[in-house]
Image (tube, rainbow, N blue to C red; front, side, top):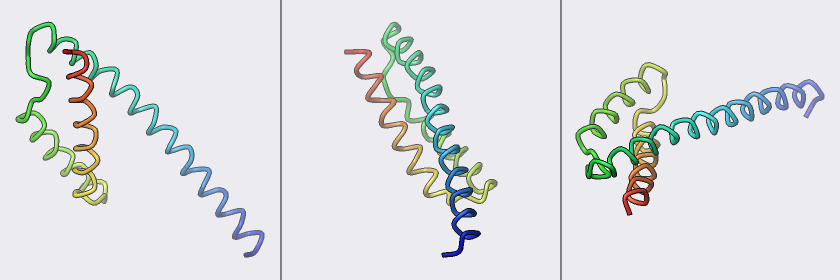
Length: 95
């Protein structure tokens, strides 16, 4: 591998690392809000899960993924993973 190739590889990887850090911070911010939702649901005896909203969110994210040239199936799997974690948090708050 040439020095130029190595430098380009390191530059690209640094960008990936920055994006990964941003993703973590965005997810942390998202979970701050979903925990607030969980507390509100617990206070008003609402169920931890909202299947209708989850369905709307999945459809919305699939569309956003298509617009962003991202595999919509991947976006759906990612959101389903997040939703499962949110529901777990809501159940813990409720319990």
